[in-house]
Image (cartoon, rainbow, N blue to C red; front, side, top):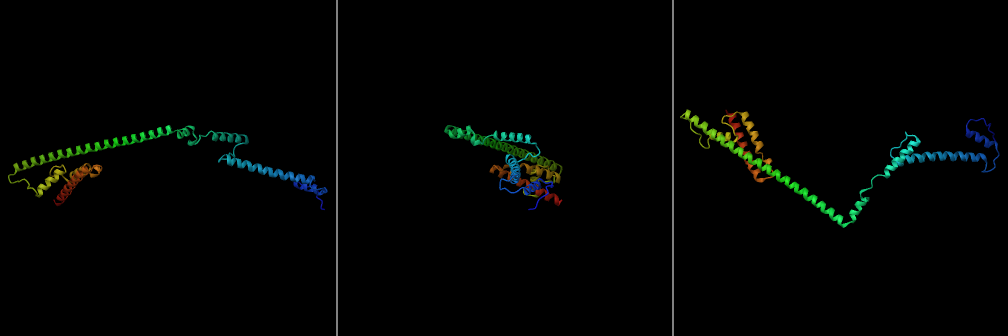
Length: 248
């Protein structure tokens, strides 16, 4: 058998050299025990490292690899205690269990829910009624304002016609259905003086359409119908005056 010199630097080589110089005497040989011990220590070290890594991963999703050993253990202990002190699920609450098991508590809870729902519906109906009342009042004021404006315009047209007839004996009032009568009607609808320019006509048209737009009364069919008729009259007067001014 080949003999080793024993001058190697590796501990494994020295163990192998010692085993080569010593006669074999079965499994109880010292070199055999040394090799088994080294293997066991290697396996135990690997298992310890793996267990420590597994515990870090399982205990917390954020491994504290930058912390020292004692501080790491203290941090893990604190986190475990915090998880144990976490609130229980709602269904595990003793009060919730008692409320579910007691018929009187269930009926009281159902009555409270019904009262809350009725209060919400009542407040919603009251709010809708206030909004409808405000819209009705605004529409009434707009109608009164339009009536006053129409009356003032007709009065002004009559006075201007009287003055012009006094100055010129040949002037006549416009016949019903004539072009002049139609122009006077259009100016009256737009709440303008006779002879207003294009800028005044456009401004008055925009203001009246904002007042009488049908979409403002979508919740009331009767008022929406009246607003539609008024807006159509305003639009007809506006288009007629534009065509008249373009011909001049």
